[in-house]
Image (cartoon, rainbow, N blue to C red; front, side, top):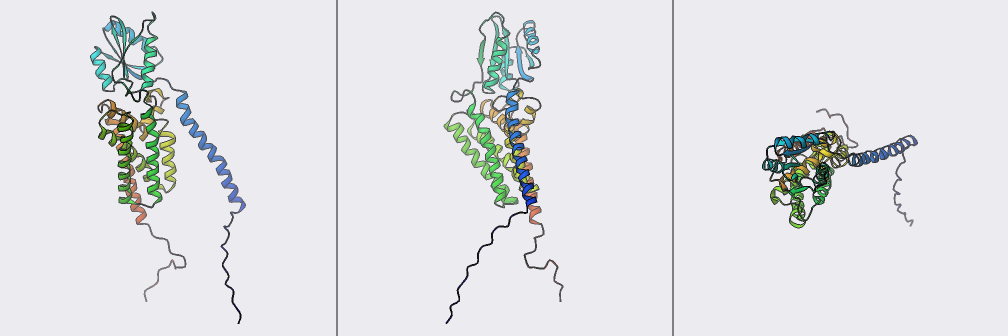
Length: 347
């Protein structure tokens, strides 16, 4: 009796691409990676290297003659300041609390007095102290009053500034995962909303309850953080729904490589080169950082603009998710292998 030996099929080795396509891919990697690194270096280093005040809103208050002299001196600093005139110190204080100006110089009988708000930007508060002190030729110590101070647990605003990039990454990750898992339309939109809400609650717990870096209404701060993440995640998922997986890369490039360094959260939008500061406020990281400052330290002053920008990003992104999912759902399925593409005539 002869025994038949069973043979185990050997898995086929992956086919190598012909030399020409391999060469093209090698060239693409060699060109695209350095180009991406160059873009990242430019986006992160150029604004920091060219940081200087550009029409920085600053108030001047006091008697007309003396205040006009101070105003003229400040206006001679190459367009560094945008001067707002106020009748007295009380009006200047209200303007700072309303986020109309970053600070104000009050002319008194004892000399100039500087009002600042380090909660708006510790960098700007320090810059104003140096600029106004330089206007005192006799070397008289400058009287300074920080009327909206940064929290004692975060005097340099490092925690708030550091939260922008993680929120952006969380949004990009949420939009990417929803896309890669194949969630579409209502399920995708609902997943983005729920995920963003949870991230916002966790972030508020860390930054407010644990670190004490935020001092406003807890629920309002959680809402701002959630909306910031939703704006990013919806934008990424929406781009992917409209143009395919490449939308994830486009969204990440727009939000992380441009939105984060252009946000001005570490300093102020008016300290960045034009028009970078303005552009950054139209992207979710910049709008989210500005809105979080307003809600946490200024009782919601000037919150309308950034809240509207974040809402537009979220609504447009979710709309793209719903429309893109509908288009994909109605697409004609590809024929299965071995099946005939021609319809079978009725007999």
